[in-house]
Image (tube, rainbow, N blue to C red; front, side, top):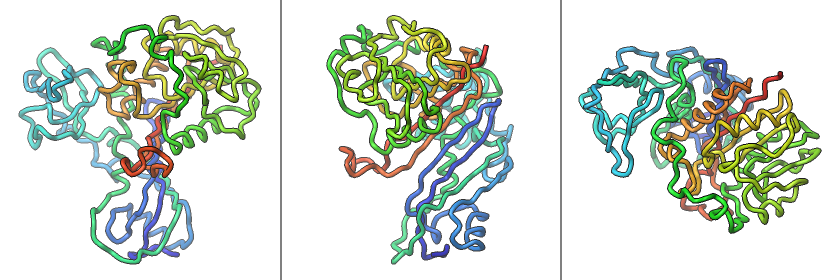
Length: 403
């Protein structure tokens, strides 16, 4: 079938960009794309018309082509007295350099109303004022967009509905993981690693939880990422692991050491060749020799680390030179044990915080981030029918610097 106004499509948008030498890839799955009603890049539709049957289209965009060009006029100097710190009753906002906040906390800025949740970046901070940057965080970037057409089918009838700009949707969130103007983002003020439950973690994790904490679609994304980044025949460390490491069965391993908090969970891991019960929040030193592992993975657990800088240094110690450290997470967690700053961040900012762990260490190179959103929720998931989309996946990784 060829593209026409009577067609519906399923597509995957993959946006790639770079900032400060770090590569970023952000993906968005799009279902029921309506060629008559929705907004798509003009070049995409033209290429699909000219090349019937094409299944992948690559597009390059210069700054200003798909996003409004960076404009200094939308960077506002706002007095600190015009920043509403209690925008949410349960959270007190104290602006920090490089962080993102809802525009609704600002007073006296043209066009801004209190309910406005669009983010701005704190691009400067002084005692009496802050610089509120309303530019899109990707406004000055070159963007490479790949559109994979998964399915193209006839549309039998038209009932109207909402117009969706799919590229704009794919670009909502990406960019927030990058630093502002090259300087470190200030994530680490105001007791960021405090938790609601400050009791020892051994008490909380004493009861085994033999369940998946993300849905099958998200697990599939993580599994494919590990398959791409972990070399075959590797000796792998699963950090803060459990009964499943989400490594694909097709990936042959030399060995898998699983370090976590509950022995029953770890012992139930079918791929584990070594089980280690160890509390990294009490003792961040890893009980392994230097340069032992070919790869280290950490799945949906980084948000519980209260001493992340020490742990990331230790991971570099036990990795072989060039070995990847891959951190994956979603938007679900145990509220009593998550570090205080994590829920206050935008989902894409969380990748930026994990990047700061790697950058602060200074022991990793080839840093990258990856995100996937918009996949359909699996029908076997308990939240199917309640949530439209699968759990999003966010990933950050780097490779140990030799020497």
